[in-house]
Amino acid sequence: MGTGFRAAFAVPEFRVLWTAAALSTVGDQLARVALSVLVFQRTGSAAWTALTYALTMLPALVSGVLLTGLADRCPRRAVMVAADVVRAVLLAVMAVPGVPLPLVAALLVVAQLAEPPFAAAQGALLPTVLGDRYEAGQSVHLITHQAGLLLGFAGGGLVVAWLGTSGALAVDAATFALSAVLLRLGLRHRPAPGEVKRTHVRIREGAALVWRDRRLRLLVALGWLALFTVVPEGLAAPFSAEVGAGVAGVGVLLAADPAGMVLGTVLLRFLPATRRVRLLGLLAVATALPLVGYFLAPDLVGAVALLGLSGVFSAYQVTAGATFVRLVPDEHRGQALGFARSGLVAAQGVGVAGGGLLATATGSAGTAIALSGLVGTALALAATAAWTRASAGATDVP
Figure 1 (cartoon, rainbow, N blue to C red):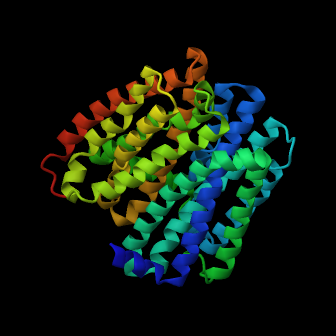
Figure 2: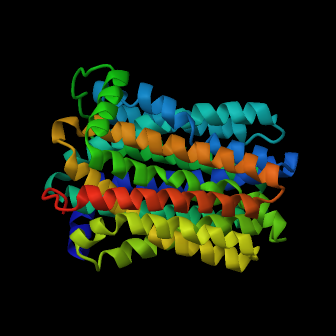
């Protein structure tokens, strides 16, 4: 594994892509902490806090359908640079002290529309840059993304407490600006791959492809169970206030899940690939089940332990994604992945928004998280039974 990682980093353009992605990931998570704190401080409402957090996810559904085709119609370097510049400018405006919350929300939506085309262009460019080192590079990106979530969330509360919400948003704007410069100067120009079908047609065809194959449907369903396990992220600020941990506690809570996922990703590598695939359903159950422990009214340490445990098992998403890619024919892979990814991000946004409304209805962020875990566990058990039947005896599932 180490040799593979070194082989990927030996490619100069990959180092540029990796650095830019790391900067953007850390900055993005810092902004999420800042926005959660900003909205909760101004409104005192768990529902509004969760809804604002959801706005960092929901626009991806629209953008995923309408804009990801830019990665095939335009030079991919140009798409990434333009997306970063747009986000840098909008985050800089959001960082201005005293900007009204409705304007912050509107700017946030527009900024998030730029993420899917960036991700599509980056994902399409990686195989070109790495060639036969692509798998190693993908592994590096996955670990870097989770580590970026960990660093951004863990340090986010402290940075917000130190710089304030405006300062934290300004730092995020700077990370996007630096990423744009790195990509523009560090990647060589490549022409657009050529004309493609209209994007919304490609997404519709991807949905039809997934629907026709029972195993693909179940893999997507297992991935979209994140709708329930993402709820603690959107309620981190209200829950931290409930247990008296303040602003600094928000970052610690948000960091627990990605920290667990990094550990889980490493641990799962010790299992054979066939065993990991067979255990997908049970791992999904084990991801949601720890959240039920919020019924016991844990303090900050207990909540972090529950979230970390959930994160360890959530590493099943890596195996689910890889299995999905292997089962989809190469000529349809972009369409199917576009549908699955857009749906996943949208599902997470719906989960966070729903969690906020549930917290308002129950009067407790902890209770809302526990109820989300309970429903997620029940649905994961149903998906487990279906996946076990669908994958039994299949020769093309590793």
